[in-house]
Image 1 (cartoon, rainbow, N blue to C red):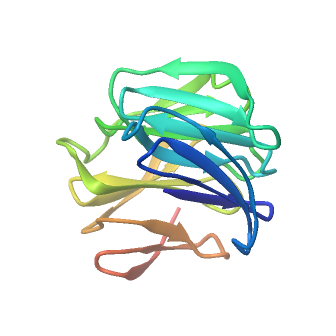
Image 2 (cartoon, one colour):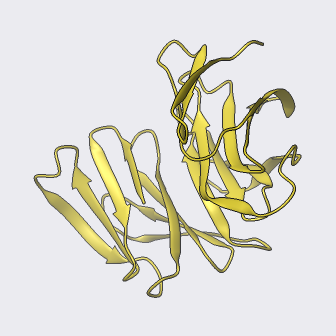
Length: 193
């Protein structure tokens, strides 16, 4: 898994290592042990690239200082595996996608829960390609991975904006914030408010 922000890229691997690179992958800045082999599932880099957050298969979320690799005291223990993480633009909110399809919105610094988004169209297990994608302005969150639906949420209110059928795999917002691209099959969707 990879995440990129502010000229840095962070990756996790099967050995449980977290590695921070420059944006051209020409220089490895540092590596540290982030968990047991096979335990790390997803990673997110804060918008300012100062914090690394990792989700584990045992329902744990941990964070580190990117500059030093030093563990931060915030640890979250959920009830199911962490399937996805995404830091909102600006870094105030971290979205966590749990294996049951629930999304929790957490404070980007303290990891305290702010809101839970209800599961919608997500009954059943997540696909092998769960996804979370923030709109560039941070006012919408695309969530996918269950029942071949991509749901678009307004995180501030917790309101479901729309559901896009037939979406499996990754998703990314276009720069205009009015369209989202999904994979499998690759498709561009206009998102109406």
